[in-house]
Length: 109
Image (cartoon, rainbow, N blue to C red; front, side, top):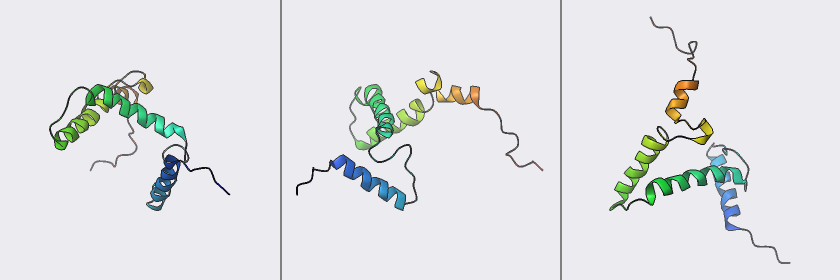
């Protein structure tokens, strides 16, 4: 009896999920084959491709790694405006929406 071929992405997803669980990690949003995790990742990678990677070439992998780090930590996570945050930057969002948690810090001597 012939079976339909298993898609390699599906097999990889099952393997990855099982290895993550063995390491004590939990899947982030959905289940195996769920498209929602992928949509968020694809959106982020697509933005980085457009805003950084398509704009220049790097001579070494170290230069590229540093550029990616600066993009993610210096721009995307701090200054870039995000639609999910009402078109504010993460820093602005934290400043305007975070309420001080006065009860969590130990008392000063």
